[in-house]
Length: 368
Image (cartoon, rainbow, N blue to C red; front, side, top):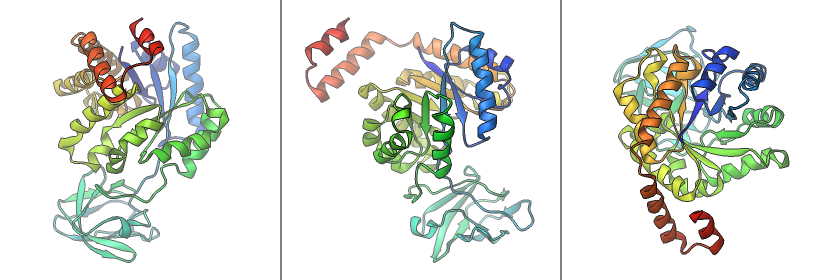
């Protein structure tokens, strides 16, 4: 019952590799537009459709995952890496032409000084460097390093708890939706960094009449998205619990609570929900998962997720097919522990409590 989303990449995008994923249980193919160009994605899509033609009894939906807004560090004077020492002061400047060193690094976000507060945190390179803001300037901020870390060029940055003043749908995203998604008949859009219900309206406006049949899955990966979850859920077609960036925006020990809350609310709304990120991360390099990873997948199923997703495991891992097989086997085992009638009654009672008695036609259909 639980569906499996697989991110396509060099590890699996040959026709033979795609056939293996299809046979192993892939239900949705994710095209990650944070990487690659239209030509490379089209080439992969063509091979996928060729593989599906050889499996006429199989159906695989196509999902375009937008890049979304991002904040990155700039380039370095030595074109290599810099080491930031613990307790050292480092300035982040909004002058993106500046070539950085150990004391000053450029940031691609012009509104950085307006978005942060003294005492707030800045996470760099997936949290490998944690900074605390000590001073705010007109064109940047000064931070103290909480740990020692070595950074390369153009590393991602997160501002936990801050309102980021960037559009959810960038010019690149619009181009990807119009000139790839609409042209090549995708089924789903995974909209990155959705923060308000208005973001969903904006995406539908870009898609226009031609994109009426495309379903939107809102990726919740920020504190603001969590705060506005109810209005997002009301407007979107589905939810993705994007635990990677979300774990940078909220304390990691609270991610499981966020996951359970979003899955439960999506279940009550009757909308599909996908749980994603680092589900079988160790299988990028190992043929077997850790026990904790299998438990994570199983608990997502027990929480009520409709689908689980593989990212690096299938896109660039050493064992893409095995990862899908393990994911499928784990989901099947977890489903044997679910008492579906109890789940149905629980959801039904919760919905009745919120919405009142069903209409006659709905009650008849529900009892069929």
